[in-house]
Image (cartoon, rainbow, N blue to C red; front, side):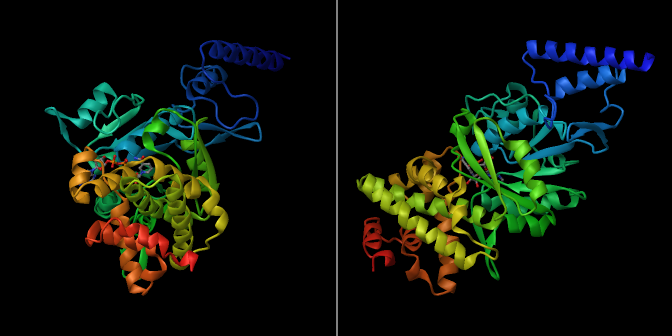
Length: 422
Ligand SMILES: NC(=O)c1ccc[n+]([C@@H]2O[C@H](COP(=O)([O-])OP(=O)(O)OC[C@H]3O[C@@H](n4cnc5c(N)ncnc54)[C@H](O)[C@@H]3O)[C@@H](O)[C@H]2O)c1
């Protein structure tokens, strides 16, 4: 009897707390929902344990399985975002908010920042005091639980989830620095768009991370121009996760009402889409610079897509299905990059001026890096090795125009003679 009335009082207290929390604008878990918001959960646990201490402080966490409360002795996973450019900072905004809403993650997020001086002040200090990456994502406040750390070894300490988001040319060196600090069970996700070339052919950036750190690596690619994501304009994205459980974790970490995620298993195809579309975007920029219109751009997008599919089928180790190209990482990312984005913009300027890609990158991008021309160079090397340059005229022309002095107007000749029309 006494037991029943105590439990009744406790239930009433929880209901009262929930109502109070709703009034304060805090989301509260409805029955059966996976994860209540951190604040609500803490207070709820305080009520249920009858002490000032939360379950977390006891070293025990609550999880829910099918609506039944269970004790899950899993410490919250610490996240480290490796990178803090335009995309890195936008994703930090999402992660910073999402970790507060889940008991799966540690509520503080480290963000490794390549240290730079901005008007005599360290960028990390600016981020940690003003909560804004004034160089790479000006005008957006980062959540206060995102902590900028200049030392990579310090940033990754204790992290169980690593989010890689740096220009791909820096990844190998960083992984070497990170390796001694990796602990068992750490997983990674790469948001990096690019490829590399290894002794046996194509090397994906996720392959480099996997091999160097010996961890499982998923990828996230999609039609996601960083500033628009930071502005919380609706978009979709794709996670490629060979391990389904990791896909679930990353979806929980990264999805928001305006950043909708589909998880697929064909991780290599997803990643290749993210890298190859930047080459096509350079071609689209050439056409803009030459004064061609939307019909031409549509042709570049279509022919570019055909080359992306053919390249993936030839060079991917795993399965390549056409449906993956219909995800956000495929055709959607290709379209957005051929209309917006830095690769298109710099390529347009390249077609209109006599300046080199490197000069334009320095002049136009304020420290941001271009991926398209460099990816075209990696792809070209692979095509040459396999004697397949002629089968990929769009990819090859982008490389030859960027690096070998081929005239930009020759790009149109390459489209006119594309094997698709022969
Ligand atoms: N920006 C986007 O819209 C977008 C969207 C999706 C994916 N991506 C991909 O995300 C990755 C990161 O892009 P971003 O936009 O965050 O970066 P960015 O190009 O905006 O910035 C460059 C970053 O590189 C860092 N850096 C400079 N020199 C370095 C060095 N020597 N070592 C290590 N880091 C150095 C800078 O501090 C800065 O954080 C790229 O692969 C890009 O293709 C970008």
